[in-house]
Amino acid sequence: MVQRVLLIGSKGQLGSQLLEDLPGDVVGITREQLDLAGSRCVIEQVLGELLDRYQPDIVINTAAYTAVDRAESDEALALQVNAWFPGALGALAKEVPVIHFSSDYVFDGLAMRPYTEEDKPNPLSVYGASKWRGEVAVLEANAKATVLRCSWVVGSHGQNFAKTMLRLACEKEVLRVVNDQYGVPTPTPFVSAELNRCLANSIPAGLFHLVPSGETTWYRYALWIIDRASSHPNWQKQLRLGKDQLIGISGDEYPTIAKRPASSRLDTQKWRNQTGKPTLIDWQEAFEPVLKDLLDKKSHAG
Image (cartoon, rainbow, N blue to C red; front, side, top):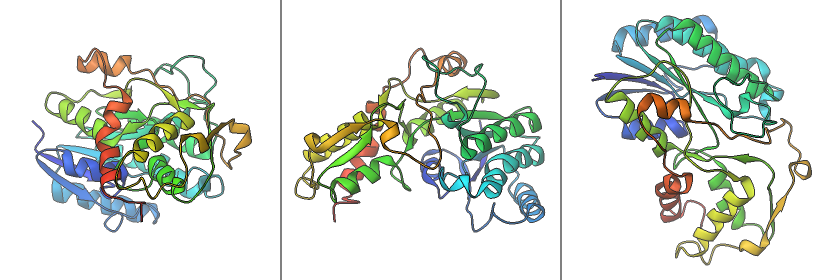
């Protein structure tokens, strides 16, 4: 049984969820305590001091540079946070398991099937390349390391697509959303539930894909969110558009600085085999508690 967890990035979207849900003695480390934008020498020194002070049984890293478009012009910092730091962490904490989170953006999205862990990454962006390099670095530095690739992460904390759609639906009379990029929303409570189950037994080392079952597009995802909000008493009077005013468009009609993969579908067979779970919960069912929390809080309803 794990006794102490050192959780790096505990104020982020995923880190906040894990801090709430993980059992036992969880020590949250924030940016104020460990600034990954600082000098590498200082980062290594502070990290070493934290490991010595808390003597964790496991380290979980949810800290990341996630501004996908900004990374194109801020490559040095994206690489430091997403690529260099996981390797440094793996080396300094090599006596204990390290769980590190990565992204579907390591792939180019051209596959006609869900990607497996055996598929070679081919990132389209600086962000995707930095996440791939981070995977390699931590796995090479720490034989006990686990890398979990997730896609379209969404939670009650921080900023995400669901919150953006709810806000825009209260501001816009027409909303255009990309309908030819496929993936799976990964709610943070789903990730924490899978980790809890894993920590209670044994932590598998290696690279794994961890997303719920099913798939969708950004447009269909937004449609589902707006449909649910339109029947919620906190939002009915606030929404300025309905499902008919939500329009599906191609990715070419919505250019971004960093190119997105057309398919972010990830095969979870390896994770299911390792953890003895024949199927994983559908993404809509997994997302229910998050969406309920967002709607109940009136977080964008004024």
